[in-house]
Image (cartoon, rainbow, N blue to C red; front, side, top):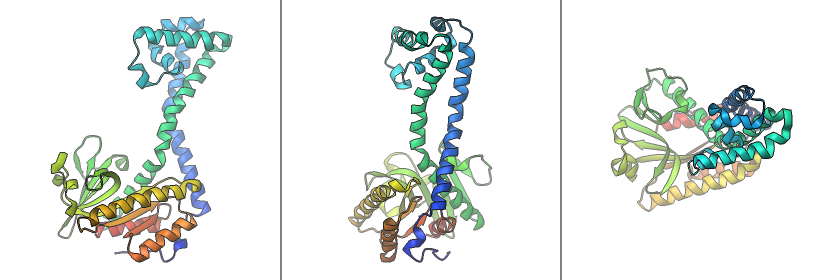
Length: 317
């Protein structure tokens, strides 16, 4: 097993350069997920140029959904509206905003469409930090498994099927729900974002002593067996230093609940933490917990050596 690269609290602190790189990575990813919305807006503009007057937009059937979006209605809201309600909403958009815009009514339509779609983009962006953090963690874990020559399979979150590592799949880290590997005589399962019945809460990472077939649906699943838990971990992928302490408080509280729940059963699985934004005071708390054994492991997500060390620790549990 690799020697832990964390020798003092300061080793855990996220540097200014790492924070900067994290913000840039987030910005690039936001631009990437915005592409479909921009393309839709271009198509909307192209279709809308077929008409001379705003009210004629109602005659283009292929524009109905776009017009409803521009009028401010969400996909959820549409489920509660009749066809007549939808026409009223579109007419309101046309009469109140597009007709007053004169010859620029098509531009006004596109602007309003993008403005409403921005809410959807914002929702995806709020979950982006966690998703990027999970992907980086999984890429590192898979690399450590590959370098150690360990055979593994992974559960596809889309098809719900187990896939052998020999099958090359693009974007694998975006689709993993669970990983199974064998080390010596030990079978190990890593499960992502799963409810832990004994804790009654969702936990980011579960490391279990079990085989792929043990991960079933319902109460027969291995997640209902407290004795099968080897480690449980929390990940906070947000890079903004302003939210670092709050994220740590949330994660620390969650890890504390995990330990308390298992201690009631006289069980002591390891707990670990991985975070992208780690400030000084937080780093000292983390380091103290590592020294006392409260935490089994910890890593700064922006530090490759720390993340690799934690993943190496996981595959050797």
